Length: 171
Image: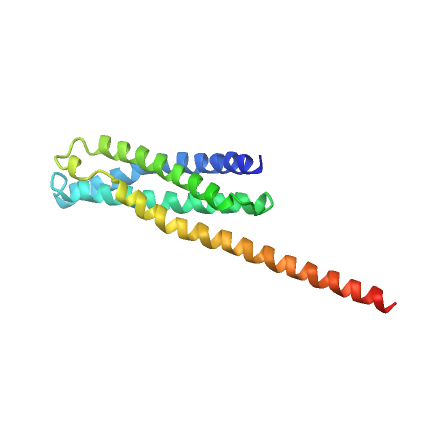
């Protein structure tokens, strides 16, 4: 139940941020095309390559935002460590990355239709896979830190309990 709430809150954060970014992408593409026009390279391979780089960077930025949002919401709602937390976070992250990579790939493809290179510059699965591997390590580290913190709290609680027991025996 808690993880469902985490996902719902994370989804809301992501939607707001991605809607904001979706409005900025056309402006950034216009800037790229305007610069290319001024340089006389609008119809060369320069322009689609720059647009591809823009989308590639967008995928990376969105992945980072998704990761930070998942962790932020998890911490805000209590940072509970469950047996399934590691897998739950990885599955949620992967789902978000696959979804927005697909959407961005379609958006990029539609923007590159007027250029002859569009079929060579699709955002491929390897970019999403690389990003997922990177953030799976980040998720591992986050969950490991929760486990370590939990173990330290248990050890401290055990020590306090032993001290109380010893003090009661002395009395």
